[in-house]
Picture (cartoon, rainbow, N blue to C red):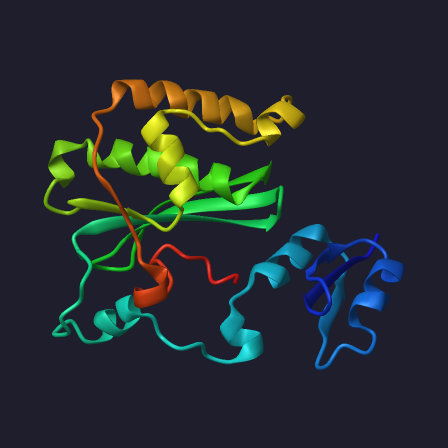
Length: 209
């Protein structure tokens, strides 16, 4: 089976039929697409950084600070930033946490078939769990997210994805249920909104916009 990835066209995604792809790229200015023999290679190409295909994007305020730490920035650097990104909605999704002060990954997980909001929720719960570790108080004083929906779900202690009703048999809901139980045992901590419009993408961003 062939897998066709449309990186730039009327719709971007991974397809298994050229008949689906042709109308999406035909006549589209500077369309970018490619075929692969394996789904894994197709996903890797689809998820690869924008820099490789579209040129270097403008640096976020955080990236500028990493290059020049004498800059005065409005966000806390002794912080943990979390984010999630899906290849499709729902689709294969990753979530991760990044230490703002160093840019190093603190955690990263991949699960099939779920949505960004669910991933953001799980990432936040994991972030809260990490920040309960007393040995990390100085390292992680603040938790950042750019998802208002996930932040509200955490505040309410429940993931309210509509897919939970529409597709109740997905394996991800076991993870979600465990995260909800975990929230009951964790001390509440303030979660701050990462101001993307002012600061650029959150440090944990996957660069798939």
